[in-house]
Length: 85
Image (cartoon, rainbow, N blue to C red; front, top):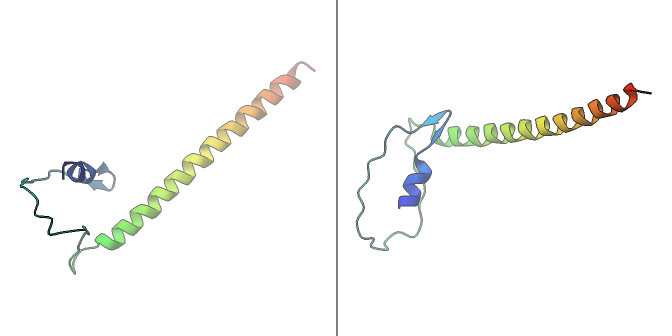
């Protein structure tokens, strides 16, 4: 449960968990799985999907930026080599 609590202590826009209250007791082994439930007024499912899409976009932008920086470094080096010729 401590790992679960740490995992949901999210500080990543647009999620900012302010506090978590918990009470630990001995388990009964009555539950074999866990899932998040949302009520009819909640947008949790759609928000989760949106966050996954947003995180994928951020990963792609970071990869693109790294690749672009590598290409620019090679191009700059190539122009530097031509400078004296």
